[in-house]
Image 1: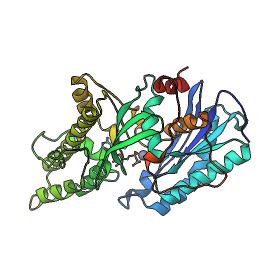
Image 2 (image 1 turned 90 degrees about the vertical axis):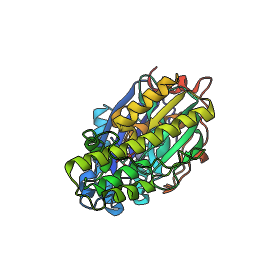
Image 3 (image 1 turned 90 degrees about the horizontal axis):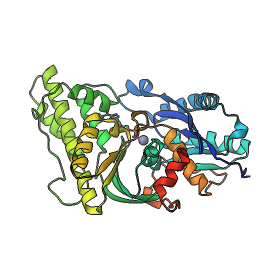
Image 4 (image 1 turned 135 degrees about the vertical axis):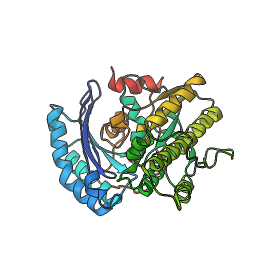
Length: 360
Ligand code: KG4
Ligand code: ZN
């Protein structure tokens, strides 16, 4: 079944939520292509992702995206040495579409298939950059569905240090944006509006900061915003000030907890990934705060902060390189803990080895 070809060249498929994506990553030549189709327009009128519509659209989009990625990468099927796909966590129907396609292609091409953890993809996205972060480091994973602080000792060696008790940071952005009448997905829209808001004009609570530990909570923010708007006319100035206040509360909380995680682990390197890591205010605040204490922050480039297949290719390649592959049965998982993953041995320096995957 395994074709012993060197170097590895992997096709990756992402379909965990509302982005259909395909990418081709070559171990010695780097990222050869990455294609993405966002379903944002499809879901906008519903104010959020409709799972059944997402699955149906993935079925329509994925195969053309795969063809396009292979064309752009100048890659024939016979040159591929493996297929990676997002196996979870995510919307189960959406995951199934990508998993079924990826598994079938790998079977037809007689190459191994590997199911990738979506959040491991986000964690490893910064390894696609010319200057990848060293291991071990602390990762702040902030997406629409997850908000976690993780000690990353190596690829697959993760310890969740703190998690949100309720809403994810991206969810908090999206929900408050909705209250301000902004279209879905609200995060980037709210961030744009916040630029014209007055700093400090609206101040919202930063929950859990007064307590020790690395737990987070964002569900109170929506209620606080609702409360602050009660009985007031929603003028353009008030909307911008509220947006600014919300962004400051979320960014302030995340920055304080990230620094606390660096303190508690004694590490100096912070990696920030997931959709919310595209937020410029968050990036500037973290770079400043961590830089002041002599540490360094690493981010994926903007297009690899939000969902994409390049990061799935990165994680899949590392696992295929370590000799892992899945059986013929596909087992997508809506829920999947990062801590159950197996460590991929990259010795002696995991970061340098991972970087060599891309930058020989
Ligand atoms: O990682 P991602 O693309 O999908 C998930 O796996 O969840 O993250 C999407 C989330 C959404 O909540 C979106 O509003 C948020 O990331 N987001 C932002 C920004 N860009 C995306 N939030 C704040 N500011 C941004 N610039
Ligand atoms: Zn994601």
